[in-house]
Image 1 (cartoon, rainbow, N blue to C red):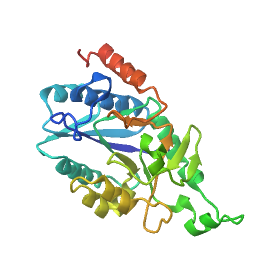
Image 2: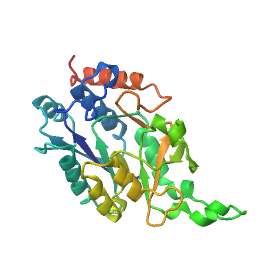
Image 3: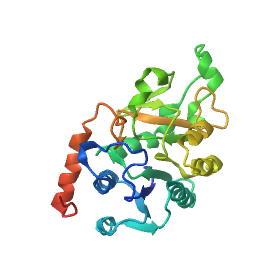
Image 4: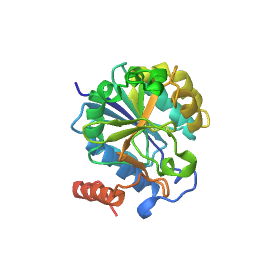
Amino acid sequence: MLPKYRIFFRACDKVESVHKTRRPYSLNKIEIIKTCFFSMYQSVQFYNHSFVIIGDELSSELLNFFGKFKNVTVKNYKFGSASKSLKKQIELALEVSDEEWVYMCEDDYLHSPNAFKFLSEFINNIEVYTETSGKKKNFMNRIIGDLSNLPVVIHPPDYPDRYRAPWKRLSFIFLSKYCHWRQITNTTHTVLLKSSTLKHFQKFFRQSAEGPSDSVLSEKVYGRIFFKNKALCISPIYGLSTHMTENVMTPLVDWEHICQENISQMKSMGVWFD
C-alpha cells in the first residue's frame, strides 16, 4: 500500500535569504516560494496526501496564490523567527497518526516532477531495499546489524558538498526501482519521515528548533557507523529536489528547465504574473 503524506510547508516571504546568499535564475523570494510550492504540489497529486502551509505573516499576494489550489490549508501566524515557525511545524506534525509519512519542508526547495513517484516506490519497498546481512564474513555489517530494522529519514536533495574532499566518507548505497539512495549524516530541516519516527526522536527535533540548529538534528538523530538509538538517513541520487540557493544546488539535474516548466504551467493556469 502506497504511503499517505502529510505535508507541512513552512513559508515566509519577509526574509529574502537567511544567509544573505543569492537566489538562482534572478528569482525573488515570492517567486521562489511559488515555484517550489507548485513543483511539489504537482508532483504529489497522484498520491494520498494533505497539504498545510505554515505561514509567517504571509503577504496578501501569497495568501491569494495559495488560495487558488484545492486541498491546501493555510495557517498564517505571526512568528517573527524561523525558530518559532519550525516549532509550530514540529508541533503540527506530531499530531499525525503513526503510520503516515510527514514531510516537513522549507519554502525554497524545488522538486522534480517524479519526486513522489520515486519516493513512494522506495518507501513501499523500504525493508527490501535497506536489508543488510552479516553473512559471508561481512564484518562491518555484523557490527551494524540489519539496517531494515532502523527508522528511516529521507532528505530529498543531494548537496554537492558531500562530494568534496572534507566531506567524503564511507556510506551505504541502496538501489531501488528508479534510482540509487545514499546514506548521509547531515540534513537541513527539510525531511520526510514516518510520524512514529518523529515522535520517537521528538526530543531532539525540539532541541534542533532552538536557533534553529541543523547540526543538533544531524548529530543526535542520524547514525553514521553505529546506529544504536539512531535513525538511518538517506538521500536519492540523483536528488529529487534542490535547495534554491546558489552554490548548493543538487548536481546533474537541469533545475533551470524544471523551474521554467513550472512557471510556464502556472502562467497557463493564471496564477503567475510577470
